[in-house]
Amino acid sequence: MPKRKDASWAIFYTYDNRTGAPITGESAATMNVYISRDGGEFSRISSPGIQAVDASNLPGFYRLALTSNETDANHILLRFASSTANTAIDACEKYFETYAVAADIPEIPSISSPPSAAQIADAVLTRSVTHVESAAPLHCLCTIILAHLESRVTENKWLIHRTDGSTQHAALEVSTSADAEAVTGVNS
Image (cartoon, rainbow, N blue to C red; front, top):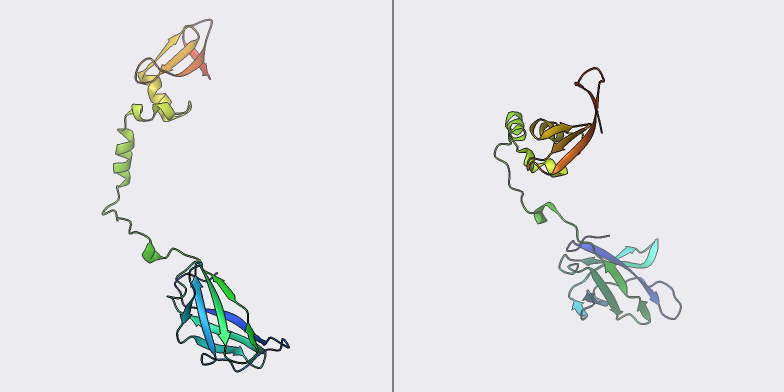
């Protein structure tokens, strides 16, 4: 689909309204061209650029040069009138697409100096667990940190809480050895 506001061509066919035979020899001198943009009123195109496509192989086919002003629409409808006797020309429609181009895209502010790997690591390692704990899954670094900060073992459960001390983050099953009080495993 041609781009809106770009110079373009419209192809149309002229024929004898009695016989259907193609008409040759048409030009801007023998034709008036009218344009309607997006369903608006028709206006005459002054000095239309009209030329035969190929009088030998495609008699009756002509092209009309359209300026960027004439294509400043989503849809145009063209009507033709010839001063040549018995000439018929069907109306011609064209649709245009609006494409984003680099000039239409707002400039993205540049970063004067992106953070170094050390700065990123420092920011990650100093981030408070409270910023991520509500969305943290069971098997993640946040849960390991919470297990060291806010957890206790009661009977056969290891309860891991969030930093508020009361909201349960995880509850894991604990198994012990019959011979000792040591924890031998933790299961989710």
